[in-house]
Image (cartoon, rainbow, N blue to C red; front, side):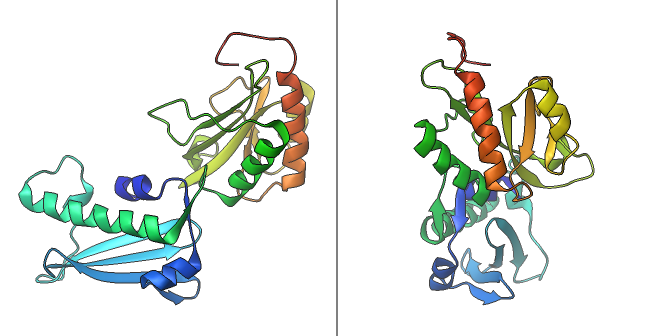
Length: 232
């Protein structure tokens, strides 16, 4: 996924009805939209497989070759700048008219977030400019973390996997962590203390009910004592 797509569609989920209304053609759960840009010099094809898969291809109508300079941030000049501006404008228009805005990218992450808001009365905090898709859940009384949802490269937790994945980090006992690591969907904690935290993937591998039970345990850990620290 190029950086312009990631920027336009971050924390958004496609609405199939809105895609059709916009002009996307549906076939086998894939939605395709074709338009001309820069005074019909280029043909832009956008393919979407809900909820998040997006592909684009820009073809020079004169040579019939694929054009990619607009995807290279370091590429400059008036011509490539005009192409990039039209490309970004179309992506933004689709995002605004065909998507629902959410806290996170994956449906399971958003379902769990809504449950957390209702049960614990806390909303995710997005603390890092360089990691805008990382949301922290903090106990409002003790200020301790009990959860972190992050959108990361899948290879960070499983080297053989490619693409993006949304994960949840929670705090549990050492004994329970060791037991869960033998089960599908559980991994050593990403970017946190692996002795006291564990990572869960949020791609429907683990049922919501199971995750809620574990989140409740993590929340209980966050109730013990009070701290002025902003990190666990």
